[in-house]
Image (cartoon, rainbow, N blue to C red):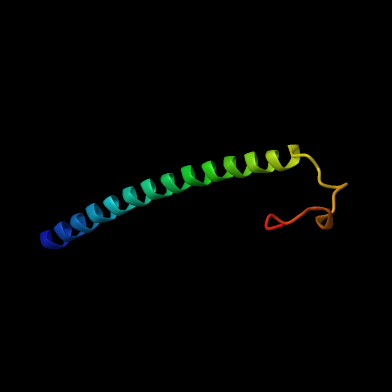
Length: 66
């Protein structure tokens, strides 16, 4: 009986370590997601603030090799 309890304690210890590592991983991933969302928001703002190309046509632009 005591060996079963010891075995269960060992399994619980490994499980606690695994859960803690998974928590750290999820936390780091959430930080990365937050950073990427901020960068995406900044890029969208830059696109909206850029000068519109409505009056221009691609045919009016000269390719760089000419």
